[in-house]
Image: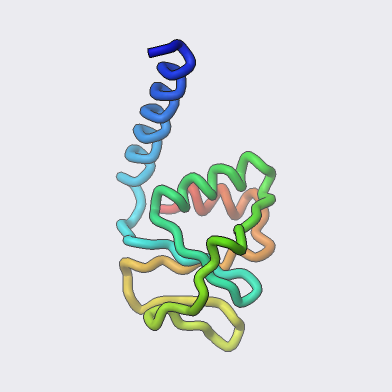
Length: 112
């Protein structure tokens, strides 16, 4: 194994350990759904954690890829008159991060 391969393996182990440490302190969910401008994206908890960390490192700037957007709203995700999404299932977390500041992204990462 080359030094570069070892470095990459070590970095992935460190990231996994950080995620596991973070996930111990947050309520368990199966998926996180994010909505902006009426479009919905689905994330696993780890994908959401990575996305939030990236948004924080980018000073709160983020970009949801349209290629990863859901084609239709899942039946258990409700859209209110204010166009924000929610769910009655506690295992599904819904967020509406349009115009979040870096402080709001940081609170999202630190939520318990």
